[in-house]
Image (cartoon, rainbow, N blue to C red; front, side, top):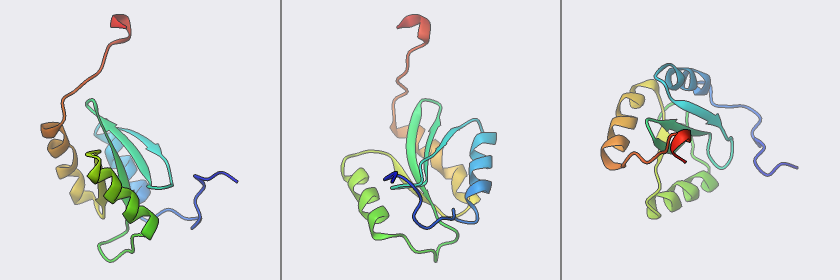
Length: 107
């Protein structure tokens, strides 16, 4: 069995909408499912996202432990409940992270 397979079987109801909005803004979105929902890259910055449908949605213990560990290690991660949070997501990360990338011709 794939250890990254979804156990619940269904994504949060707002996940597709959030993915579409991120992609419309130029982000690269990779659906992970476990331990969190998405890996998102935008302007040289990567973050992992856990999507929940509304602020009352429950965060599983495994997800909470993963997000805490990522924070302790200084790695970007976020919990997203609705589209309004997307506006705040990357400006904050871009301000705190240097853009490091190489163009293929420069490698």
